Image 1 (cartoon, helix red, strand yellow):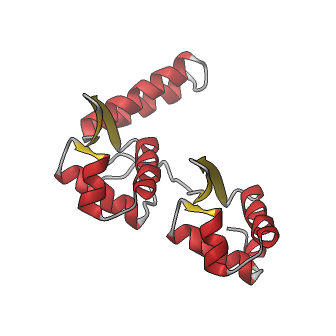
Image 2 (cartoon, rainbow, N blue to C red):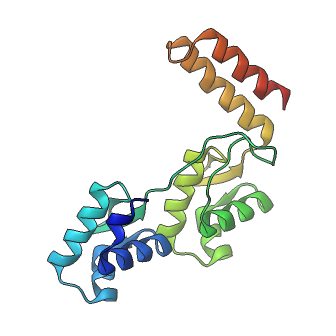
Image 3 (cartoon, helix red, strand yellow):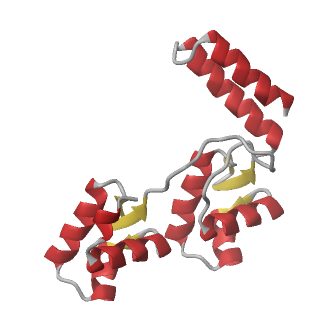
Amino acid sequence: MNENIFEHKTRRMIYNHIMIHPGDSFNNIKRVFELTDGTLRYHLNYLESRNEIRSATVGNNRCYYPVEKIALSPRSGSDLRTHRLSANQERLLSVIQRKPGVTQKELIYLTGMKRITIAYNIIKLLDYGVVRKEPNGKYICYYHLSDTELRQKLIKKLVFKFVNYEIDEKTFLALKKKLEER
């Protein structure tokens, strides 16, 4: 994190607010800090241009999310990759592990989180590769990926990279061997 970006008190408060409340809307942030449109827009654009936050349109609102720094190194725990999971992501993952096939509606009930917070964090968990989703009728169900499923997924990605000449044969074989040994 570049310290110069956060020298401004208002910008630091806005960033911290977004870290604690991912998916909060422009209007809500403006109301919380009692800022003018121009001041808030300036600081949000500044943070977004420095790749510290990102925004997305959700319904009629512009919502802001932290850009998470992700480490992709193997570890010996229950997953093959480590991530700096937020408290909300840890909570959701815990519920998904305890109740395989849980729906988003059930996650709202079980965690007390807002729908938008769950949606954002589920996308992150899917991106990290620790959760998978499956359609079940009109619902989407979420499952924690087992070590075996995660290994298979990573091996498929390695094969794809090798076939597309993104990694050489020696690197491919070494990484594949490490994954198969676990």
